[in-house]
Figure 1 (cartoon, rainbow, N blue to C red):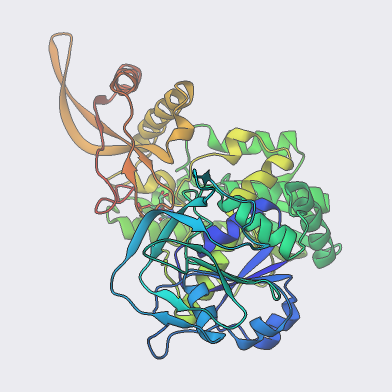
Figure 2: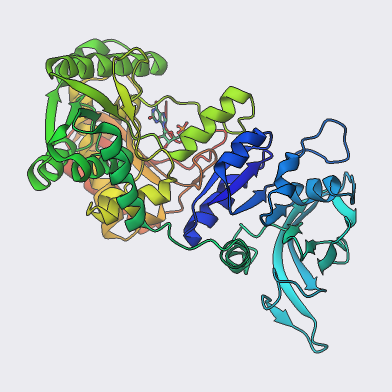
Length: 517
Ligand code: XMP
Protein backbone atom coordinates (compact mmCIF):
# COMPACT_ATOMS: atom_id res chain seq x y z
CA UNK A 1 0.00 0.00 0.00
CA UNK A 2 0.87 3.58 -0.63
CA UNK A 3 0.90 6.58 1.68
CA UNK A 4 -0.13 9.99 0.39
CA UNK A 5 0.84 12.96 2.51
CA UNK A 6 -1.55 15.84 1.99
CA UNK A 7 -0.29 19.42 1.90
CA UNK A 8 -3.73 20.86 1.23
CA UNK A 9 -4.11 20.65 -2.55
CA UNK A 10 -7.51 20.24 -4.11
CA UNK A 11 -5.94 17.51 -6.26
CA UNK A 12 -4.97 15.19 -3.40
CA UNK A 13 -8.16 13.15 -3.48
CA UNK A 14 -7.83 12.86 -7.22
CA UNK A 15 -4.34 11.37 -6.80
CA UNK A 16 -5.75 8.81 -4.40
CA UNK A 17 -8.55 7.90 -6.78
CA UNK A 18 -6.13 7.47 -9.67
CA UNK A 19 -3.91 5.22 -7.59
CA UNK A 20 -6.86 3.09 -6.57
CA UNK A 21 -8.04 2.90 -10.19
CA UNK A 22 -4.67 1.41 -11.01
CA UNK A 23 -5.55 -1.21 -8.42
CA UNK A 24 -3.33 -0.13 -5.54
CA UNK A 25 -4.64 0.67 -2.08
CA UNK A 26 -3.62 4.04 -0.66
CA UNK A 27 -4.57 6.38 2.15
CA UNK A 28 -4.37 10.13 2.52
CA UNK A 29 -2.90 11.48 5.74
CA UNK A 30 -1.97 15.02 6.77
CA UNK A 31 1.62 16.12 6.03
CA UNK A 32 2.48 16.19 9.74
CA UNK A 33 1.54 12.54 10.29
CA UNK A 34 3.32 11.07 13.25
CA UNK A 35 6.59 9.30 12.36
CA UNK A 36 5.60 6.25 14.41
CA UNK A 37 2.30 6.08 12.54
CA UNK A 38 4.15 6.22 9.22
CA UNK A 39 6.40 3.34 10.30
CA UNK A 40 3.37 1.37 11.46
CA UNK A 41 1.57 1.98 8.16
CA UNK A 42 4.59 0.43 6.41
CA UNK A 43 4.00 1.90 2.94
CA UNK A 44 5.58 0.42 -0.18
CA UNK A 45 5.97 3.94 -1.48
CA UNK A 46 5.14 7.51 -0.48
CA UNK A 47 3.59 10.34 -2.43
CA UNK A 48 4.05 13.92 -1.35
CA UNK A 49 1.11 15.79 -2.84
CA UNK A 50 0.64 19.42 -3.79
CA UNK A 51 -0.37 22.31 -1.61
CA UNK A 52 -1.14 26.02 -1.61
CA UNK A 53 1.81 27.16 0.52
CA UNK A 54 5.27 28.35 -0.51
CA UNK A 55 8.38 26.35 0.42
CA UNK A 56 10.71 29.40 0.71
CA UNK A 57 8.42 31.05 3.26
CA UNK A 58 9.23 30.39 6.91
CA UNK A 59 6.83 28.06 8.66
CA UNK A 60 5.66 26.33 5.49
CA UNK A 61 5.04 22.61 5.93
CA UNK A 62 7.69 19.93 5.41
CA UNK A 63 7.45 16.17 5.06
CA UNK A 64 8.45 14.17 8.15
CA UNK A 65 12.18 13.31 7.79
CA UNK A 66 11.44 9.61 8.11
CA UNK A 67 9.90 9.67 4.63
CA UNK A 68 13.40 9.87 3.17
CA UNK A 69 14.96 7.20 5.35
CA UNK A 70 12.53 4.32 5.04
CA UNK A 71 14.15 2.88 1.93
CA UNK A 72 10.96 3.14 -0.16
CA UNK A 73 10.41 5.13 -3.36
CA UNK A 74 9.08 8.66 -2.91
CA UNK A 75 7.28 10.75 -5.52
CA UNK A 76 6.78 14.46 -4.92
CA UNK A 77 4.16 16.25 -6.97
CA UNK A 78 4.26 20.07 -7.27
CA UNK A 79 4.61 21.33 -3.68
CA UNK A 80 5.64 17.78 -2.76
CA UNK A 81 8.54 18.00 -5.22
CA UNK A 82 9.57 21.39 -3.91
CA UNK A 83 9.64 20.35 -0.28
CA UNK A 84 11.53 17.21 -1.26
CA UNK A 85 14.14 19.33 -3.05
CA UNK A 86 14.41 21.70 -0.11
CA UNK A 87 14.66 18.98 2.52
CA UNK A 88 17.35 17.05 0.63
CA UNK A 89 19.57 20.09 0.02
CA UNK A 90 18.30 21.65 -3.20
CA UNK A 91 16.83 25.10 -3.62
CA UNK A 92 13.37 26.41 -4.40
CA UNK A 93 12.61 29.86 -5.73
CA UNK A 94 9.43 31.64 -4.78
CA UNK A 95 7.57 33.36 -7.55
CA UNK A 96 4.41 35.41 -7.58
CA UNK A 97 3.90 34.42 -11.22
CA UNK A 98 1.70 31.45 -11.85
CA UNK A 99 2.15 28.94 -14.61
CA UNK A 100 -1.20 27.33 -15.12
CA UNK A 101 -2.46 24.97 -17.78
CA UNK A 102 -1.10 22.91 -20.63
CA UNK A 103 2.66 22.58 -21.16
CA UNK A 104 4.94 20.38 -23.20
CA UNK A 105 7.91 19.06 -21.25
CA UNK A 106 11.02 17.66 -22.89
CA UNK A 107 12.45 14.46 -21.53
CA UNK A 108 16.11 15.30 -20.94
CA UNK A 109 17.53 12.39 -18.99
CA UNK A 110 17.22 8.66 -18.72
CA UNK A 111 15.32 7.38 -15.70
CA UNK A 112 13.59 4.31 -14.40
CA UNK A 113 10.62 6.60 -13.89
CA UNK A 114 9.88 8.28 -17.24
CA UNK A 115 11.94 6.48 -19.88
CA UNK A 116 9.74 4.94 -22.54
CA UNK A 117 6.78 7.17 -21.72
CA UNK A 118 6.23 10.02 -24.15
CA UNK A 119 3.61 11.70 -26.32
CA UNK A 120 5.81 13.11 -29.09
CA UNK A 121 9.13 12.54 -30.81
CA UNK A 122 10.36 15.41 -32.98
CA UNK A 123 12.69 15.31 -36.00
CA UNK A 124 15.75 15.51 -33.76
CA UNK A 125 14.59 12.58 -31.68
CA UNK A 126 13.55 14.82 -28.81
CA UNK A 127 10.93 13.10 -26.68
CA UNK A 128 8.25 15.12 -24.93
CA UNK A 129 5.12 14.82 -22.83
CA UNK A 130 1.89 16.83 -22.72
CA UNK A 131 1.28 17.80 -19.13
CA UNK A 132 -0.81 20.01 -16.89
CA UNK A 133 1.03 22.57 -14.78
CA UNK A 134 -0.29 24.59 -11.90
CA UNK A 135 2.40 26.29 -9.85
CA UNK A 136 4.23 29.50 -9.02
CA UNK A 137 7.37 28.41 -7.14
CA UNK A 138 9.90 26.09 -8.71
CA UNK A 139 13.00 24.06 -7.94
CA UNK A 140 16.10 25.95 -9.16
CA UNK A 141 18.89 23.71 -7.89
CA UNK A 142 18.97 19.96 -7.45
CA UNK A 143 19.74 18.12 -4.23
CA UNK A 144 22.80 15.83 -4.23
CA UNK A 145 22.30 12.63 -6.13
CA UNK A 146 19.53 14.02 -8.34
CA UNK A 147 19.48 14.71 -12.05
CA UNK A 148 17.03 16.58 -14.25
CA UNK A 149 14.73 14.25 -16.17
CA UNK A 150 12.28 16.67 -17.77
CA UNK A 151 12.33 20.32 -18.55
CA UNK A 152 10.44 23.23 -20.14
CA UNK A 153 11.80 26.66 -21.10
CA UNK A 154 10.02 28.33 -18.17
CA UNK A 155 10.63 25.51 -15.72
CA UNK A 156 14.05 23.93 -16.37
CA UNK A 157 13.61 21.40 -13.56
CA UNK A 158 10.14 20.08 -14.42
CA UNK A 159 11.01 16.58 -13.22
CA UNK A 160 13.96 15.33 -11.22
CA UNK A 161 15.08 11.99 -9.91
CA UNK A 162 17.58 10.18 -7.76
CA UNK A 163 17.87 6.79 -9.42
CA UNK A 164 19.69 5.06 -6.59
CA UNK A 165 16.98 5.80 -4.03
CA UNK A 166 14.06 6.06 -6.47
CA UNK A 167 13.14 9.51 -5.25
CA UNK A 168 11.35 11.51 -7.93
CA UNK A 169 9.73 14.90 -8.20
CA UNK A 170 7.43 16.28 -10.87
CA UNK A 171 6.33 19.88 -11.15
CA UNK A 172 3.36 18.88 -13.31
CA UNK A 173 0.24 16.97 -12.26
CA UNK A 174 0.16 13.35 -13.45
CA UNK A 175 -3.21 12.80 -11.76
CA UNK A 176 -5.25 15.09 -14.04
CA UNK A 177 -6.50 13.77 -17.36
CA UNK A 178 -4.86 16.65 -19.26
CA UNK A 179 -1.53 14.98 -18.52
CA UNK A 180 -2.15 12.36 -21.15
CA UNK A 181 0.36 9.80 -19.93
CA UNK A 182 -0.50 10.45 -16.28
CA UNK A 183 -1.93 6.97 -15.76
CA UNK A 184 1.20 5.34 -17.18
CA UNK A 185 3.46 7.57 -15.13
CA UNK A 186 1.66 6.70 -11.90
CA UNK A 187 1.50 3.00 -12.84
CA UNK A 188 5.24 2.99 -13.52
CA UNK A 189 5.90 4.44 -10.09
CA UNK A 190 3.48 2.17 -8.24
CA UNK A 191 3.83 -1.15 -10.00
CA UNK A 192 7.42 -1.10 -11.17
CA UNK A 193 9.29 1.13 -8.75
CA UNK A 194 7.34 0.48 -5.55
CA UNK A 195 6.61 -3.12 -6.53
CA UNK A 196 2.91 -2.90 -5.68
CA UNK A 197 0.51 -5.39 -7.21
CA UNK A 198 -2.80 -4.34 -8.74
CA UNK A 199 -4.97 -6.22 -6.27
CA UNK A 200 -7.42 -3.50 -5.28
CA UNK A 201 -10.27 -4.64 -7.53
CA UNK A 202 -14.03 -4.60 -6.84
CA UNK A 203 -14.20 -8.32 -6.16
CA UNK A 204 -11.22 -8.20 -3.79
CA UNK A 205 -12.67 -5.14 -2.06
CA UNK A 206 -15.93 -7.01 -1.51
CA UNK A 207 -14.19 -10.15 -0.20
CA UNK A 208 -12.06 -8.07 2.07
CA UNK A 209 -15.00 -6.04 3.41
CA UNK A 210 -17.01 -9.21 4.06
CA UNK A 211 -14.17 -10.78 6.01
CA UNK A 212 -13.67 -7.59 8.03
CA UNK A 213 -17.37 -7.24 8.86
CA UNK A 214 -17.65 -10.89 9.91
CA UNK A 215 -14.66 -10.53 12.14
CA UNK A 216 -15.94 -7.31 13.67
CA UNK A 217 -19.51 -8.31 14.43
CA UNK A 218 -19.24 -12.05 15.03
CA UNK A 219 -22.77 -13.31 15.55
CA UNK A 220 -24.14 -10.02 16.88
CA UNK A 221 -27.09 -8.22 15.33
CA UNK A 222 -26.70 -5.16 13.15
CA UNK A 223 -29.15 -2.38 12.35
CA UNK A 224 -29.00 -0.21 9.22
CA UNK A 225 -30.97 2.86 8.21
CA UNK A 226 -31.72 2.17 4.55
CA UNK A 227 -32.61 5.24 2.53
CA UNK A 228 -32.55 3.91 -1.01
CA UNK A 229 -29.51 6.11 -1.76
CA UNK A 230 -26.34 4.59 -3.19
CA UNK A 231 -24.28 4.35 -0.02
CA UNK A 232 -26.85 2.78 2.29
CA UNK A 233 -27.99 0.43 -0.49
CA UNK A 234 -24.46 -0.83 -1.02
CA UNK A 235 -24.00 -1.28 2.74
CA UNK A 236 -27.25 -3.28 2.85
CA UNK A 237 -26.18 -5.55 -0.01
CA UNK A 238 -22.72 -6.02 1.46
CA UNK A 239 -23.88 -6.76 5.00
CA UNK A 240 -26.57 -9.08 3.75
CA UNK A 241 -23.91 -11.05 1.94
CA UNK A 242 -21.59 -10.97 4.93
CA UNK A 243 -23.95 -11.70 7.81
CA UNK A 244 -27.33 -12.57 6.27
CA UNK A 245 -30.14 -12.50 8.81
CA UNK A 246 -28.11 -10.79 11.48
CA UNK A 247 -28.88 -7.60 9.55
CA UNK A 248 -32.12 -5.68 9.97
CA UNK A 249 -32.78 -2.56 7.92
CA UNK A 250 -35.17 0.21 8.84
CA UNK A 251 -36.51 2.18 5.92
CA UNK A 252 -38.23 5.37 7.00
CA UNK A 253 -40.89 6.49 4.53
CA UNK A 254 -41.24 10.18 5.31
CA UNK A 255 -43.80 10.87 2.59
CA UNK A 256 -41.25 13.05 0.80
CA UNK A 257 -39.78 10.41 -1.45
CA UNK A 258 -39.87 10.16 -5.21
CA UNK A 259 -42.72 8.39 -7.02
CA UNK A 260 -42.85 4.65 -6.15
CA UNK A 261 -39.56 4.92 -4.29
CA UNK A 262 -40.77 3.16 -1.16
CA UNK A 263 -42.18 0.26 -3.17
CA UNK A 264 -38.98 0.00 -5.18
CA UNK A 265 -36.77 -0.17 -2.12
CA UNK A 266 -38.95 -2.89 -0.61
CA UNK A 267 -39.13 -4.85 -3.88
CA UNK A 268 -35.39 -4.67 -4.40
CA UNK A 269 -34.16 -5.51 -0.93
CA UNK A 270 -36.93 -7.36 0.86
CA UNK A 271 -38.50 -9.31 -1.98
CA UNK A 272 -35.58 -9.81 -4.38
CA UNK A 273 -32.65 -10.14 -2.08
CA UNK A 274 -34.36 -11.42 1.03
CA UNK A 275 -33.00 -8.69 3.29
CA UNK A 276 -34.99 -8.07 6.49
CA UNK A 277 -36.41 -4.58 5.97
CA UNK A 278 -38.86 -2.84 8.26
CA UNK A 279 -40.71 -0.09 6.47
CA UNK A 280 -41.77 2.64 8.87
CA UNK A 281 -44.67 4.42 7.26
CA UNK A 282 -44.31 7.82 8.85
CA UNK A 283 -45.76 10.10 6.19
CA UNK A 284 -48.47 11.43 8.46
CA UNK A 285 -46.09 12.12 11.29
CA UNK A 286 -43.73 14.08 9.03
CA UNK A 287 -46.47 16.00 7.28
CA UNK A 288 -48.27 16.94 10.48
CA UNK A 289 -45.03 18.28 11.97
CA UNK A 290 -44.37 20.29 8.83
CA UNK A 291 -47.80 21.87 8.81
CA UNK A 292 -47.56 25.66 8.46
CA UNK A 293 -43.74 25.68 8.28
CA UNK A 294 -42.23 27.60 5.37
CA UNK A 295 -38.70 28.38 6.52
CA UNK A 296 -36.33 25.97 4.69
CA UNK A 297 -33.88 25.51 7.56
CA UNK A 298 -36.76 24.91 9.94
CA UNK A 299 -38.15 22.29 7.57
CA UNK A 300 -34.76 20.57 7.41
CA UNK A 301 -34.55 20.51 11.21
CA UNK A 302 -38.03 19.10 11.63
CA UNK A 303 -37.44 16.41 9.01
CA UNK A 304 -34.09 15.51 10.59
CA UNK A 305 -35.50 15.35 14.11
CA UNK A 306 -38.52 13.35 13.07
CA UNK A 307 -36.32 10.91 11.19
CA UNK A 308 -34.27 10.25 14.29
CA UNK A 309 -37.38 9.82 16.39
CA UNK A 310 -38.99 7.33 14.01
CA UNK A 311 -35.75 5.43 13.53
CA UNK A 312 -35.19 5.32 17.27
CA UNK A 313 -38.69 3.98 17.89
CA UNK A 314 -38.13 1.14 15.46
CA UNK A 315 -34.69 0.44 16.89
CA UNK A 316 -35.97 0.19 20.46
CA UNK A 317 -38.61 -2.25 19.37
CA UNK A 318 -35.94 -4.57 18.05
CA UNK A 319 -34.19 -6.67 20.65
CA UNK A 320 -30.51 -7.30 21.08
CA UNK A 321 -29.03 -5.04 18.44
CA UNK A 322 -25.37 -4.37 19.12
CA UNK A 323 -24.16 -2.56 16.02
CA UNK A 324 -25.38 0.29 13.88
CA UNK A 325 -24.18 0.22 10.27
CA UNK A 326 -23.56 3.47 8.39
CA UNK A 327 -22.69 4.35 4.83
CA UNK A 328 -19.83 6.69 5.72
CA UNK A 329 -17.45 6.93 2.76
CA UNK A 330 -13.80 7.99 2.50
CA UNK A 331 -14.35 11.63 1.52
CA UNK A 332 -16.49 12.05 4.71
CA UNK A 333 -13.63 10.61 6.75
CA UNK A 334 -11.03 12.87 5.14
CA UNK A 335 -13.27 15.89 5.53
CA UNK A 336 -14.03 15.32 9.17
CA UNK A 337 -10.35 14.62 9.90
CA UNK A 338 -9.52 17.86 8.09
CA UNK A 339 -12.16 19.72 10.05
CA UNK A 340 -10.71 18.51 13.34
CA UNK A 341 -7.19 19.64 12.53
CA UNK A 342 -8.39 22.84 10.93
CA UNK A 343 -7.09 21.76 7.53
CA UNK A 344 -10.38 21.25 5.80
CA UNK A 345 -10.45 22.72 2.34
CA UNK A 346 -13.99 21.71 1.61
CA UNK A 347 -16.61 22.43 4.20
CA UNK A 348 -19.72 20.36 3.88
CA UNK A 349 -22.61 22.69 4.32
CA UNK A 350 -25.32 20.12 4.69
CA UNK A 351 -25.78 17.47 7.26
CA UNK A 352 -27.28 14.38 5.93
CA UNK A 353 -30.61 13.70 7.52
CA UNK A 354 -29.38 10.15 8.05
CA UNK A 355 -27.03 11.48 10.75
CA UNK A 356 -27.89 10.02 14.11
CA UNK A 357 -27.11 11.37 17.57
CA UNK A 358 -23.84 10.28 19.17
CA UNK A 359 -25.47 8.95 22.31
CA UNK A 360 -27.15 5.97 20.64
CA UNK A 361 -26.03 2.89 22.45
CA UNK A 362 -24.56 1.12 19.44
CA UNK A 363 -21.13 0.41 18.13
CA UNK A 364 -20.58 1.44 14.53
CA UNK A 365 -19.99 -0.71 11.48
CA UNK A 366 -18.80 1.36 8.53
CA UNK A 367 -17.75 -0.96 5.72
CA UNK A 368 -17.37 1.82 3.12
CA UNK A 369 -15.15 4.02 5.27
CA UNK A 370 -12.14 3.49 3.04
CA UNK A 371 -13.90 3.85 -0.30
CA UNK A 372 -14.42 6.66 -2.75
CA UNK A 373 -17.84 7.09 -4.34
CA UNK A 374 -16.74 5.55 -7.64
CA UNK A 375 -15.48 2.51 -5.74
CA UNK A 376 -18.74 2.26 -3.81
CA UNK A 377 -20.58 2.19 -7.13
CA UNK A 378 -18.30 -0.47 -8.56
CA UNK A 379 -18.73 -2.75 -5.57
CA UNK A 380 -22.48 -2.11 -5.71
CA UNK A 381 -22.47 -3.58 -9.21
CA UNK A 382 -20.20 -6.38 -8.04
CA UNK A 383 -22.78 -7.19 -5.35
CA UNK A 384 -25.49 -7.42 -7.97
CA UNK A 385 -27.29 -4.11 -7.47
CA UNK A 386 -28.81 -2.76 -10.71
CA UNK A 387 -26.86 -0.16 -12.68
CA UNK A 388 -29.70 2.35 -12.51
CA UNK A 389 -29.71 2.26 -8.74
CA UNK A 390 -25.96 2.47 -8.33
CA UNK A 391 -25.63 5.36 -10.78
CA UNK A 392 -28.64 7.27 -9.55
CA UNK A 393 -28.47 11.04 -9.06
CA UNK A 394 -28.10 12.19 -5.47
CA UNK A 395 -31.28 12.96 -3.58
CA UNK A 396 -31.24 15.19 -0.49
CA UNK A 397 -32.14 13.74 2.89
CA UNK A 398 -35.10 16.13 3.37
CA UNK A 399 -36.36 14.96 -0.01
CA UNK A 400 -39.24 16.78 -1.63
CA UNK A 401 -39.55 18.80 1.59
CA UNK A 402 -37.01 21.30 0.26
CA UNK A 403 -38.39 21.20 -3.28
CA UNK A 404 -41.80 22.52 -2.32
CA UNK A 405 -41.19 26.23 -1.92
CA UNK A 406 -43.96 26.62 0.57
CA UNK A 407 -45.55 24.81 3.43
CA UNK A 408 -45.29 21.08 2.67
CA UNK A 409 -48.69 19.59 1.89
CA UNK A 410 -49.51 16.14 0.60
CA UNK A 411 -51.36 17.63 -2.35
CA UNK A 412 -48.24 19.55 -3.41
CA UNK A 413 -45.95 16.57 -2.81
CA UNK A 414 -48.16 14.39 -5.01
CA UNK A 415 -48.08 16.87 -7.88
CA UNK A 416 -44.32 17.33 -7.54
CA UNK A 417 -43.64 13.59 -7.42
CA UNK A 418 -45.46 13.06 -10.69
CA UNK A 419 -43.79 16.00 -12.42
CA UNK A 420 -40.38 14.84 -11.22
CA UNK A 421 -41.11 11.33 -12.44
CA UNK A 422 -42.01 12.54 -15.94
CA UNK A 423 -38.83 14.62 -16.14
CA UNK A 424 -36.58 11.75 -15.03
CA UNK A 425 -38.35 9.21 -17.20
CA UNK A 426 -37.87 11.41 -20.27
CA UNK A 427 -34.22 12.05 -19.39
CA UNK A 428 -33.62 8.33 -19.28
CA UNK A 429 -35.49 7.73 -22.52
CA UNK A 430 -33.51 10.44 -24.30
CA UNK A 431 -30.26 9.03 -22.92
CA UNK A 432 -29.63 12.28 -21.08
CA UNK A 433 -29.88 11.05 -17.50
CA UNK A 434 -26.23 10.06 -17.14
CA UNK A 435 -25.16 13.23 -18.94
CA UNK A 436 -26.58 15.32 -16.12
CA UNK A 437 -25.29 15.12 -12.57
CA UNK A 438 -28.56 15.91 -10.88
CA UNK A 439 -32.01 16.68 -12.24
CA UNK A 440 -35.34 17.22 -10.55
CA UNK A 441 -38.54 19.22 -10.46
CA UNK A 442 -39.47 21.97 -8.00
CA UNK A 443 -42.96 22.95 -6.92
CA UNK A 444 -43.65 26.70 -7.01
CA UNK A 445 -46.62 27.80 -4.94
CA UNK A 446 -47.74 30.50 -7.33
CA UNK A 447 -50.89 30.53 -9.38
CA UNK A 448 -50.27 31.22 -13.01
CA UNK A 449 -52.90 31.61 -15.65
CA UNK A 450 -53.67 28.93 -18.20
CA UNK A 451 -56.42 28.81 -20.80
CA UNK A 452 -58.35 25.58 -20.96
CA UNK A 453 -61.13 25.55 -23.57
CA UNK A 454 -62.89 28.87 -23.11
CA UNK A 455 -62.01 29.28 -19.49
CA UNK A 456 -59.04 30.76 -17.66
CA UNK A 457 -57.60 28.66 -14.86
CA UNK A 458 -55.06 29.73 -12.29
CA UNK A 459 -52.82 26.82 -11.49
CA UNK A 460 -49.42 25.87 -10.08
CA UNK A 461 -45.98 26.22 -11.65
CA UNK A 462 -43.33 23.53 -11.92
CA UNK A 463 -39.67 24.46 -12.37
CA UNK A 464 -37.22 21.98 -13.84
CA UNK A 465 -33.62 21.96 -12.69
CA UNK A 466 -30.77 19.98 -14.25
CA UNK A 467 -27.09 20.56 -13.62
CA UNK A 468 -23.69 19.30 -14.66
CA UNK A 469 -21.05 19.23 -11.98
CA UNK A 470 -18.07 17.25 -10.76
CA UNK A 471 -18.13 18.05 -7.08
CA UNK A 472 -21.51 19.70 -6.44
CA UNK A 473 -19.66 22.75 -5.10
CA UNK A 474 -19.98 24.52 -8.43
CA UNK A 475 -22.39 23.59 -11.17
CA UNK A 476 -23.50 24.64 -14.62
CA UNK A 477 -27.11 24.36 -15.72
CA UNK A 478 -27.47 21.54 -18.21
CA UNK A 479 -27.98 22.72 -21.77
CA UNK A 480 -30.80 20.30 -22.53
CA UNK A 481 -32.22 20.35 -26.07
CA UNK A 482 -35.26 22.59 -26.62
CA UNK A 483 -37.25 19.76 -28.18
CA UNK A 484 -36.62 17.67 -25.11
CA UNK A 485 -37.73 20.43 -22.75
CA UNK A 486 -40.79 21.01 -24.87
CA UNK A 487 -41.77 17.36 -24.61
CA UNK A 488 -41.33 17.30 -20.84
CA UNK A 489 -43.30 20.51 -20.44
CA UNK A 490 -46.17 19.22 -22.60
CA UNK A 491 -46.36 15.99 -20.70
CA UNK A 492 -46.35 17.66 -17.29
CA UNK A 493 -49.05 20.18 -18.23
CA UNK A 494 -51.23 17.61 -20.01
CA UNK A 495 -50.89 14.76 -17.55
CA UNK A 496 -50.97 16.55 -14.22
CA UNK A 497 -54.05 18.48 -13.39
CA UNK A 498 -53.31 21.54 -11.30
CA UNK A 499 -50.19 22.55 -13.27
CA UNK A 500 -50.49 25.23 -15.94
CA UNK A 501 -46.88 26.24 -16.51
CA UNK A 502 -43.39 24.75 -16.62
CA UNK A 503 -40.14 26.74 -16.47
CA UNK A 504 -36.48 25.73 -16.83
CA UNK A 505 -33.88 26.98 -14.37
CA UNK A 506 -30.86 28.48 -16.14
CA UNK A 507 -28.88 29.64 -13.10
CA UNK A 508 -25.38 28.47 -12.33
CA UNK A 509 -23.92 27.69 -8.94
CA UNK A 510 -22.60 29.95 -7.58
CA UNK A 511 -24.45 32.08 -6.86
CA UNK A 512 -27.60 29.97 -7.20
CA UNK A 513 -27.49 26.68 -5.30
CA UNK A 514 -28.53 23.42 -6.92
CA UNK A 515 -31.62 23.05 -4.75
CA UNK A 516 -34.09 25.91 -4.62
CA UNK A 517 -34.09 26.17 -0.85
P1 XMP B 1 -26.92 22.92 -3.01
O1 XMP B 1 -28.38 23.16 -3.08
O2 XMP B 1 -26.31 23.35 -1.72
O3 XMP B 1 -26.76 21.35 -3.11
O4 XMP B 1 -26.19 23.50 -4.19
C1 XMP B 1 -25.56 20.64 -3.25
C2 XMP B 1 -25.90 19.17 -3.12
O5 XMP B 1 -26.37 18.89 -1.80
C3 XMP B 1 -27.68 18.35 -1.82
N1 XMP B 1 -28.43 18.90 -0.69
C4 XMP B 1 -28.71 18.22 0.44
N2 XMP B 1 -28.45 16.96 0.80
N3 XMP B 1 -29.54 17.33 2.86
C5 XMP B 1 -28.88 16.51 2.00
O6 XMP B 1 -28.68 15.34 2.35
C6 XMP B 1 -29.86 18.61 2.56
O7 XMP B 1 -30.46 19.32 3.35
C7 XMP B 1 -29.43 19.08 1.29
N4 XMP B 1 -29.54 20.27 0.64
C8 XMP B 1 -28.93 20.12 -0.56
C9 XMP B 1 -28.25 18.76 -3.16
O8 XMP B 1 -29.28 17.89 -3.58
C10 XMP B 1 -27.03 18.73 -4.05
O9 XMP B 1 -26.75 17.40 -4.49
